[in-house]
Image (cartoon, rainbow, N blue to C red; front, side, top):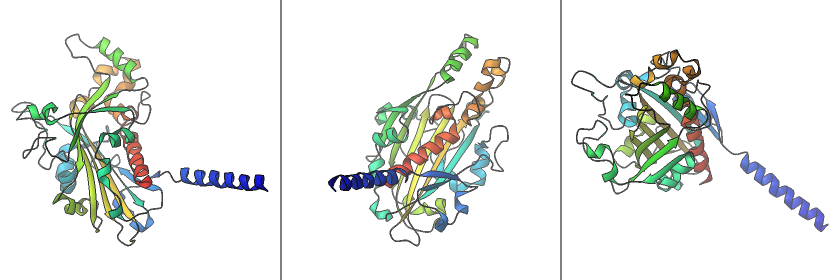
Length: 334
């Protein structure tokens, strides 16, 4: 009898553990997040959309030119640019550094009131390590920030300096490319002219992570399109990158479910702006068969045989999906 009871107890524990594991979020691709009624969002499901099939996207790169995006989507520009007045940097008096953007957005339901969830717990290095373990971080101060050292830097907000807000955490991060990419970069460097700077086999960036404060907090329903109270929002601004990427933004918005008292709705945005001069560097590799799959546009969009893993080496679409799924699972476990 005791053995039978023990077996039943073990089976119950196994079932409970299996059931908990089965609750991990799954992604469901949709044409647009706003097109899915809140009532149709299933438990443990992230609805996900990006701009690759957008009418504004360049068919060759699947990215949207920054100017087109900024002009046609002023609300998104206001909240998802590095700062609302950001424009493409000027290289000299006549030439602008042209950019293109990759934008992803996602939405999921959480089985708790929004007020019971505390996004301040994620404004730290631990949060960054958990959503992408392949990236290594170390804290920095305002004095370490690259744009702060240049009063005319395009990446410096007009009304403040990065990382001087008491609520902000700033980090310097490094991601070493994975899989076959480092070997490809090594070969590309051997074929480059000696006068050209070698291509790094890593991406290094500086960013600020903090909670969104008033009055922007109450203005966020304009972006999400969801008419309910925003209880908190968290953003990461990537304001300096050593190559390829010009800037990045992660914004997570938490709102009370419009019709359910015991539920919340989270909407997460990821925007990455990349340099067009890097995107179109195809001629350097076109005559070298082994490097044809190292074309930056293909790598960025996950369409190269060199892509691997779940982080930046996988390409931006998989990278965005992995980060958003990790965030959903963290919020679910809170």
